[in-house]
Length: 107
Image (cartoon, rainbow, N blue to C red):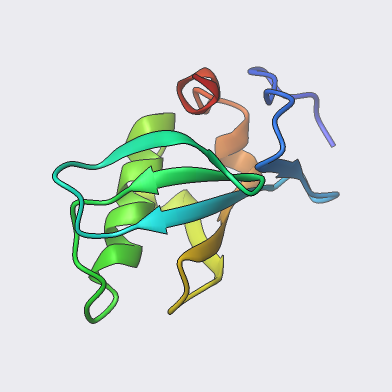
């Protein structure tokens, strides 16, 4: 495993896997007035989503928001757990972890 160019912040909601991928724990609040990170909730990053929780729209919006925030391609973000739950786990591919702007999530 190569060392990361941009180090991952030491926060509870980010976990590095052995393969080099990063798991992001997120607590989603749908139907917000705008999409933004809003602190920590039970060890997960709380994200207020503008999208409604209908037909997977919130999941797609969350993955797009995370990719945009980290400045990586959307194809590098996948939903691991929480398809219909407010608590979700997203995986960032190891190839994108090297250049992701992690500081944008840690603020």
